[in-house]
Image (cartoon, rainbow, N blue to C red):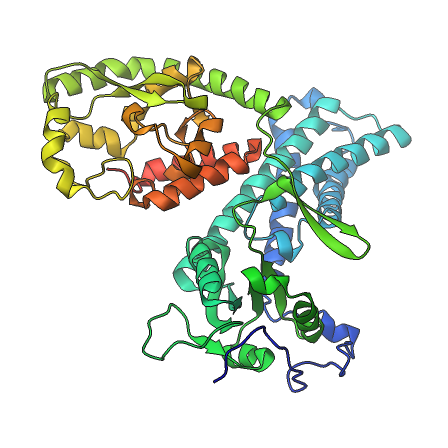
Amino acid sequence: MGELDSFEILPDHAMSPLGANGVPRSAWQRTKRAARWHRPYAAILLVLDAGAAALASLTAATQLPKADSGFQNNPELFNLVAYLGLPAVWLLVLWGHGAYDRRYLGTGTDEFKRVVRASWTVVAIVAFAAFAFKIDVSRFSVGAALVGALVFVLILRYIARRSLAFARTKFHLATHRMLLIGTLQEALEVHAAIARDPGAGLVPVGIHLTEGYAPHPSTVTPVPVHAGRDILSLVRELNADTIAVCGSASAEPVELRRLAWQLEGTGIDLAVAPQLTDIAGPRVHIRPIEGIPLLYVEEPKLSGLGWLFKNVIDRVMALLGLLICLPFFPLVALAIRLSDPGPIFFRQPRIGREGKTFRVWKLRTMYVDAEERLATLHDQNESDGLLFKMRNDPRIFKVGKFLRATSIDELPQLINVLLGEMSLVGPRPLPAEDGDFLGDVRRRLLVRPGITGLWQVSGRSDLSWDDAVRLDLYYVDNWSLVLDLHTLWRTIGVVVFRKGAY
């Protein structure tokens, strides 16, 4: 088999209803997708959204005082508006904002952003209708119904997404079978990234090489590797419904354009995974200039109103957390002292934002001679990075293992958050003696270290050092308030199920 310089797309009329010029023969066939899981899922969301709006109206009508429940003197009109009109408005507005678009369902935050934006439109429509028709309604009850509907819609959609992720992970349902196109290294990198999130529903089923030779059949690869094949016939053979063009292959404009033409009308999705990785969200913008789509990458936004709001949330939540934990502290302190006489707290110099050193607060989980015993355990280190990690560390006493597994030992770091030395969300602070590191890792110091972060919610001690650094750098480069809130939410599940804690 000869060596390949690029991927060539050959027409396959048996698979695609296209002419030789790549123009679809039928607009109807162009609407049929190879992957159709989103249709029943969107139908379920329609029912849930309508139910959420009706439930919000019911709650406002039954739980609020009768005087504020809104045109109670006309129950027929109330029932018509509350349980039919308002849910219908919600569904239409959600549809208009793309909340049922398959591109935003199942993964990412765009779905929830669109729901929130739709809620503002619903508020505007209700306000305009009340003003235009001079409807005498209780503003309080209407406001409660609208806010309640938004809350219920978000909760039910989150439950639906978690159910979808469970079905994808455990039963391999509602997935996309993906063919990766690119060099072997690029395709394997994309495969590894996809494998880290099985809940996204992307299942690579093969790799088509654009350069080099297909490896020997005895070579172990996660999926079969092909070279020199007609891509459309390979897609049909693998029963794939998505093609992902990886890395340098995405820089072949002629081949990529021809591939897009050939896929028109087939229902096969085309995705491009460019070489620009770990940069996402609002930092990336596409601006067409004379027909050329230029991908602009903005600088990380680590200042401004959102950053100020993050600091306010940090201080307020830290204060509330300390007040809630205060009554339980004597019991935890007594358990530590009974396990091993010594100080209750463990304080260690750590590196903070811009390289400033501070002393982190933690509940002591190790025997007092832990530092002296460390030298005898270096050969048993299970971490490949700067931190020492050992699953069954003999220096940790029994109560300390429980405190670590439940992350209770981290709670005193709320003091560091209150003092402005740490944040609720951010890269974990490294010990000061390991802080004089060079290279990309120093970029972590652009933000304050956090009690939790992407490292913690993605595997904690089970992650390799390279993966931990990659996640920390992703956080720095793509910080947003939504990312912080999402990470805090995921932290709850990680703590409850004690994932990767030792």
